[in-house]
Length: 106
Image (cartoon, one colour):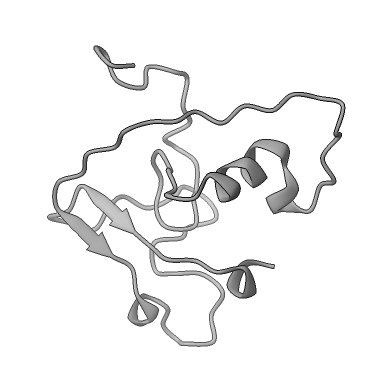
């Protein structure tokens, strides 16, 4: 990864809640919940091993996703969500940054 970047078979065509692409997090606990499936409501099997990859991420021009990206305000998804094909990054930016909380997810 250091020399070639994430060359895994990553689905960049997926939908993603905040646009398609590779997702990362500042919180190890949050990443672990994705690894086990707990974030999607699954109960992790305590006898299995799950993986979380620690990466150093460098970003350039960041677009912060805010409540204004949810129009109308009562919608569950941001303007970057598309259930069929996913949306690209906002023009002029190479990263979307969003803050989430448990009360907004579960």
